[in-house]
Length: 83
Image (cartoon, rainbow, N blue to C red; front, side, top):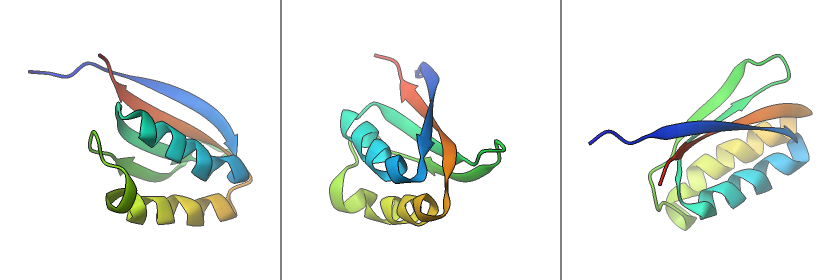
């Protein structure tokens, strides 16, 4: 069975990035998170398994935090699974 997905884009500052990723991960219907710099270049592409939160997500959040520290402004692209 093929899952239907759609993407959303959020313009974020480096300060907002980590909290936005955590917020979206808690929603639970996220399949993938892509972080792009101001020029549209992909910095990280993180696949997320449905329902993964907490300790299992810690390595990805650490990577996002490191990128957030270096990013002034960027785009957060989120791939969601449709209900």
